[in-house]
Each structure stands twice: as structure tokens, then as C-alpha cells.
Length: 104
Image 1 (cartoon, rainbow, N blue to C red):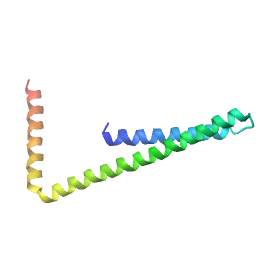
Image 2 (cartoon, helix red, strand yellow):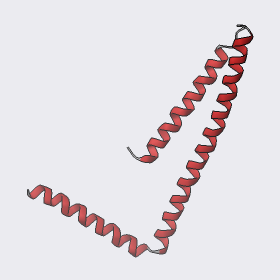
Image 3 (cartoon, rainbow, N blue to C red):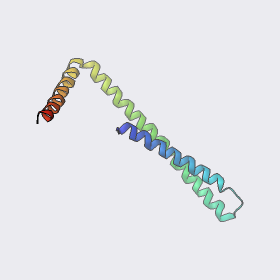
């Protein structure tokens, strides 16, 4: 599993958690007394704060990923032959390792 898909999965799970928390708070919206209303209010505030932090984290992760992609594209455009040489060298090493494993 790649880091990107792990992050996407984490984001989906946290989003589902927040949705479930909101649904739970709505379900508790019965006339159950002052203590229940206070607990519900505190839970809503905590959930709202968590939701805001989660949104900021998600935005930060996407901006960092975009910056990494942009840096990679800039490098590829600036030094295409060097990039091809490095890729070919890595391919050669992987091929040699795989071939070595077959001959043993």
C-alpha cells in the first residue's frame, strides 16, 4: 500500500468518524435533562474543533503533496537526461538482482 493511499484511507476513516459523531449527537437530542444538554454541547464543541483541525490537516497534506509533485516536475524538466540515466541505472540494478536470483 502506498503512502498516498494510506493517507486517503485515513482521511476517509476520520471523515466517517466525524459523520458518525454528528449523527450520534443528533440522536441524543432528546429532552433528557440539563446535564445531558451540557454534555451534548461540550461534545458538539469538541467535534467542531476536531473537524476544523482535520480540515486544516487535510489542506496541509494536499498542499505538501502538490509541492512535492511540482518539485519533481521541475527537476524532470530541468534535467531530463540525468533523470533518464538514473531511471536506467535503477532498472539495470533491479534486472541484475532479479537475474541473479534466478541463476541461483
